[in-house]
Length: 287
Image 1: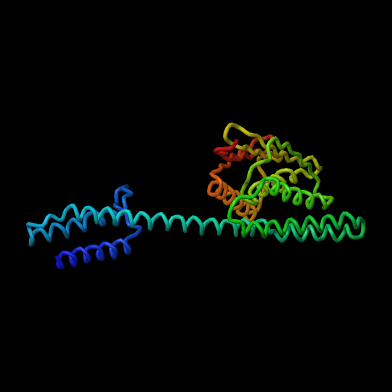
Image 2: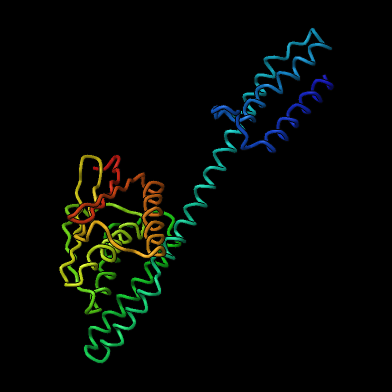
């Protein structure tokens, strides 16, 4: 019996070493079954067969099968934990990238320049802009450490601060209107604001004559919260490569965070009338 125990111990060690070295290896030709899963099933059975050649009276196949199942279960647990850690790492990187995009030096410098002008012409407006800038920056920093969702009203307050800062510059003339038919829900921080900023910068502000418009609405559609953001910017806007990359990363991160944090979806469509962004957030069990 001691030999049997040693044989099976060797089998388990062999499987563990093989699986650790081939954790990402799969069978070729389109099959996505990991090799280490097959190893968990086959190696203990091979050892059981080899032992039965020397000790034919011992029937160890049921024991080997049990060992195989336990090894597969253990490997699946490891895989699940690794996937969760990887998703958490990607989400953390996404939050960091989102913050980097939000903390745009150009926007901050322009805002400070506008505040400087207001200090001479309208001190009360300058004080209000300073408060808005402080709240805007604080919200961006807080978003980096936030691991979950925030109330939509908090996100809306952040959006108001951003819009007020844009309006502090007389040359940034556009209208921002909204119709919030539902407010009692939560969103990933900065997600909606990022899309509003895109609508302002790449849509409304393209109109230099002040006719740019951004409109946002929220509605309850069945078991989903629908957030719609529209602008009347032209369908094709000339952007630099850096602007295109920054915009693409911002939208990609927003889409990923919506899906990861609240199982939400994001769709964007553009035509001659402007751009329309639709966010759908499921509200399972909502009363």
